[in-house]
Image (cartoon, helix red, strand yellow):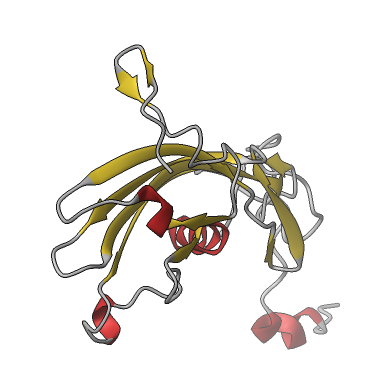
Length: 188
């Protein structure tokens, strides 16, 4: 049930929306066709396992903005926005990394509209799986490698030295094996 309370001229949804939620009942908003609401929520996003390493999502819980609009003929148009960072080891140099990512995801759930208009995050009874949607949206925003900085030089393939700390690091090149037999020649 919506409360008619106002805070600074803005309608509140204190009785409808818990500030931290993993699942949200869209029907409780009681929107009619063309109406919409913007909700400020917090959701827990599960850690990621990438390349054998564990990456925690920060902050926990993640503050999100959820825009919900009721469409003609039923159904919902949804938009989810948030900023989150992954905390873990850089995949190049193994130093701590915490890259941040902006997420802006949209979903449409139109009953009877076919597979393209059927959101996997909205159940038939109108419950939105906010936790699952936020995790999947963040996963789509991730790069191929989680790095401490974009120009991370990584580790030396020979000795493992951090090339970010030693940019002039080098080793003598191995001799060309095609010339190995010539080294066996002895001129006396």
